[in-house]
Amino acid sequence: MPTHLGKAPTGQKNLVFVEYDRLLELMSRYLPQIFNDYEHFVQFLRTEKLLDSFADQFILQLPNPRQDYYLQKLDKVSRDILGYMHFAEDALGYYPVNIDAMLMQDFKKSELSVIFL
Image (cartoon, rainbow, N blue to C red; front, side, top):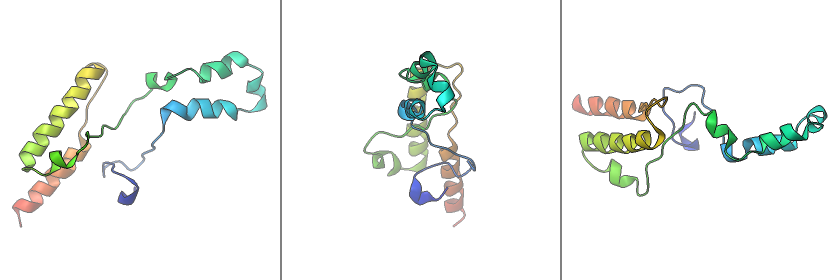
């Protein structure tokens, strides 16, 4: 994914961003004619927050001002970001949530490269 389109972990080769709030509602407007005969199905697709039950990943964005996180020593950056991620894990519940800090792996690579300069 080109970096000018947004921030995403470099290890993710196949990444799709979907706005769940509107996806099924929009799809329900353009269903093939055969499905329009099933009004209960169409209304089911328009159920608020329906896809939230099926999400297997979400991307967490740091609160503004994000530079407060980044403009510090790298170990403090890591500690603060992991602390914020822990907050999200607490809010979502521990099971079946699996937190993976792929962006932090990029930070580690950067830190190692600076050590050898």
